[in-house]
Image (cartoon, rainbow, N blue to C red; front, side, top):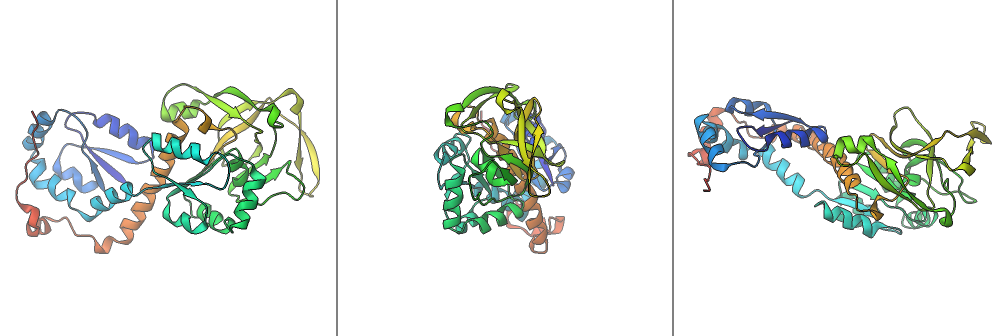
Length: 344
């Protein structure tokens, strides 16, 4: 999918960079004919009088930009972004903190307690909390089938702490009887790797990939509360952060292929943040800090997924879309010349 950015003057480079972050192709638009190769258009901020004069000089407004605004694809894209909502599983734990963080970055957070509510959101956050209690409540409300369907559909999901455990394909160190998992993340999680509530801690984590994508410091504050850790990760899992292993965790017990447990010598670092496809997971609690970059990163993945979904839906409805040929434009009621407003 290609998104045009009017590149006559102003902050078009910043828009191109933002589109790159979410995996979309930004195309600089300086001629009207270039609009034929894009699916949406951004008109950036800048000096409006200068932009208007340049647009007029290139005959952009009357013949190209005005008809583009009224194309079905463009209006559909705008409507989709306006209605985007992020669900937060609100059974137990720190869901209120996630809702507050979403509000800070301008996203709409929706509390999710029933499977049917997932139909109204475009992404999901599974917050930290007591994973066994959350699993029992999810089972009581018959949420697991809907959650697995949501993950399997490729919609963006972010799990923090207990949410990481939920998303893992395997979990060890569980209570007697274990707990049900959603799965999807190709990793093995140790449920209480860092110990009990009394062994909770905070530490500065190195997060170069987060800084590369979202800017800011190359570190972030990791709040670990009775936290899990990823002890094994598949080849398709991208590691975003790791943490020093405590001295009393020099050996890790993991299950082997014969349903028996075996000890493995741990490394100096253990994985605490990953991404795989549509899944993002952290063993710590970003919602208990003021660093909003994790939500911004999640939003980038959400928008990327949104772009792909919209491209598919627009293509599926392609036969219903109005052609933008010269003849069609001539027949439209908005064919009359329109001028950009000039504010002085």
